[in-house]
Image 1: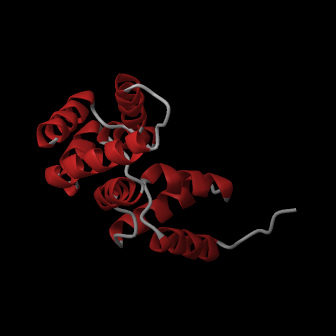
Image 2: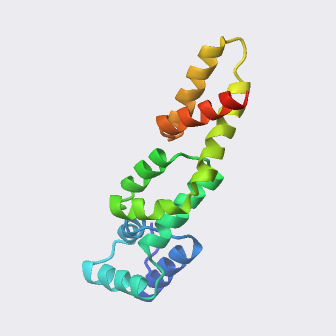
Image 3: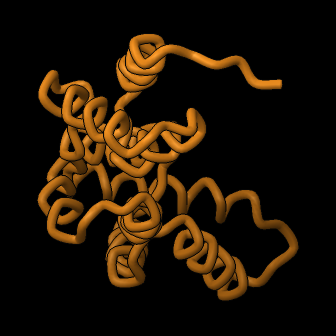
Length: 157
């Protein structure tokens, strides 16, 4: 049996939901569906969240990109796919990718390459390299950026 809430209680719950962590429109809409609101109530709460800046798609996108790159070490491809699944437009995603500094991006690729490669034992050098490239691609990094990092490493050696 689910508890029923007043309009004001639901509105406050959604405000708290947005304050706790930046949210995208799709997440808020899903939360509203959970409360089984009528369309007029949804619209009123939605407009209130936007007007009071609790809900801001650009802020969400920038925060998401920073978190997934600097904390989880995802590449741009994987981040973009996940943002698209959340209903964020290509234009906004491209605009917000300036949150990742190119130098940090290359350093991260190099570091992950070195770490992963050093953990591969009993393989020939070309197998290590191939396996590590596949791993980086699965983390969402672009092949040309990976190649650039490898060339950089090889020129240092």
